[in-house]
Length: 363
Image: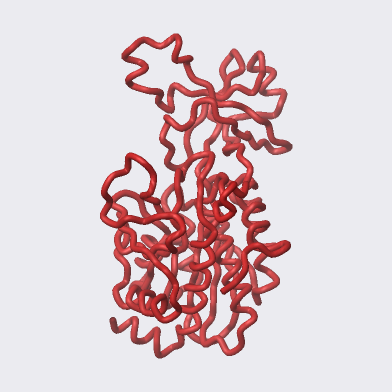
């Protein structure tokens, strides 16, 4: 079992990954952070032609792919009004009600600018407007400018990416972390940590590929290209899951909670867990005394949806870290779930020799 709270360790890596700006299609800065941290533990680090990072360790044996996506949900500048306000469109899924009065960072070619998402004041709304709530079309960004020309002189233009302005913090309960982009910089950090752990083991009977995929939030695009590049024999998609432990959620098909272990996603909108690989995951967790949970998601999907459909098919499962308030400025996760997920992945990957993978393919 590894220790997360080490100097220059996992927590610092996660802070660095989450605080950098990198919405879908603009993942370059995130990719370079991941490259810096995974390179010491990899034999080769490359990118595919869409920009997904691919780290490889080992050159013989079956190919095992573990993937977390680099991108976060964000926005794009679409136009600047005559009065100097900025209109925008979403990159990925946003619920408009979480956006008013939130700080954002607009990333231009030369520098970043802080703005705030504005909307019509509720004091000036009619009763039916208040009941309806705001839509994305109602919102705008205020950077404090007084005219369109002033915004243009700042260097802001259509197509510039926008991300939440939110720092990574450890909460008063030291097991809990909060910040933007946990979906899915947390998965990328797990990939790095698994590489680090396995680099210290000898005799691994497979080739390990650690991937930071691009554009997951807008259609799993990097998962398709990176899978075609690697041609894996088995794959794990690492992401965050939906925690059901806050007020008002009610009964769920599976009751996933923070601090109770990582979750094996058995069903989502694009993927059903590969039966034999899911059984292996459950058996390994039991033998290693790793607490796990099970997740069923009717809406939404992970990179597993694209990976498992490659060529003749790739045995794939999605492993998730329970998270509260995803696709917002502040997601909360529990570091104990992260610790157990890394232990779980390491134990599974160590067992994936050719004989084991052949049995998965027959299953």
